[in-house]
Image (cartoon, rainbow, N blue to C red):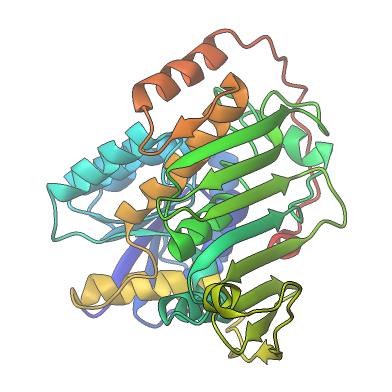
Length: 387
């Protein structure tokens, strides 16, 4: 085929953005949109080409023969059944983050895809397209930092208002969303964390439920990590701080890198710190360093579109690479699940984690929830502040 016929399932905030992105890709055709909210679907189809079909049922869309691929942009719990159903119908899948609510549900998606290896399974990890992130990944792989001994990532620029949480009945509930900041705002950074450093083998977290908002899920997290090679890390995130920060620090045996405000600064030592520590006769030594601002290329400014375009090319050419393979999504989900379990249970969690225990905890949270969601309000939405 010359073009990939795409259907967008869910045309809320992100799905609406994807309507525009798909139309900007020459090898893609926006063939259908689907939303169970009929009024919303009928309104959003006006943004699509005249021949774009509108559906109010996922079953009807997937049975229609209208699409070759779908973009899944619905509440988190629905990712798993819709993706599995799409694979069974021979349809390629690009799923919004997170791939699933739990590691066990992510594994079900992976198992379903394994039965249809001819199909492409991609994730909307658009942060991997940012040039600074790609440069950091390259520097790690090239050994620029020597042996990494400690990483700290503070991501507190995800400020959200109470109005945001009140804008959807499913938001910030165990039954509707399955979690808070770890599952909604931070999957990108959890993915980048494991993409850069791999998964830790142990985590210990402090998790606050509704610290800043009237919600029943976490909005503040502080996690300590241990890696198999003995290095350590910290991951801190919140939706209640302003102005907040996004600061990544990597300490290695060849110096310290800080990434903040879009700039990579690297204070590099002239020699390996471990070697210097063992060889210098001085008791209070100092080392010469180079202060480097690492250059990066300019971002495209349309990173979600970049992910969709890579997906389209991969559907047309089996040799083409995706920005993120669907199977990779289980890692960030497990990382987030481990943090949440550790914080709520007050205990250290080993990775790989016990999915049975986590699923039982989540089921109990849903079953025993006494939280009363306020009346859903219409919120002012400007997604530009979130990108």
